[in-house]
Length: 152
Image (tube, rainbow, N blue to C red; front, side, top):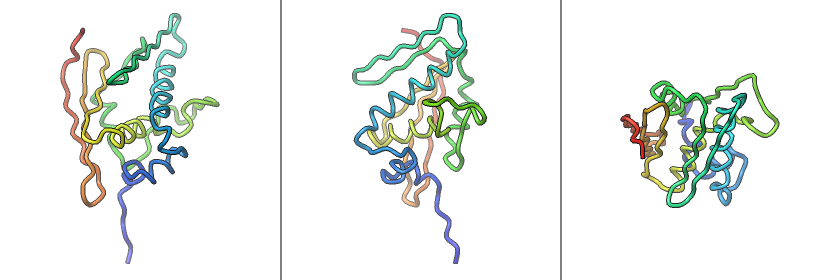
């Protein structure tokens, strides 16, 4: 008999997530900050006046002045937990972009730390609020909600 196991377990079971990141759950907050910073630095790489900011408090907010993303396309790719996702298959920096699954890791760690709390991504006037739930059979139920980003 051959058994099939969902790949989502690599991200949504604490032991699998620790193994896929190679890091202990004790430093998941630091991993989130690092992954967000890596993505923001990648987005502004090559700009004349790059800007990246981090705000902490009840939520973590990272902003950059990069070109932005098409959130429909982007979220469809990062929310497929049956495959690895990377925007830089042949481009690696010594300290950034090594695993190629940063956004999937960000979503999974966020889910582990605050189950059921949505992760919000905004770009180019778009907003997606992503809620993840692990089903009893080990698959991930993904609930993205798209809207227009609100300027404060």
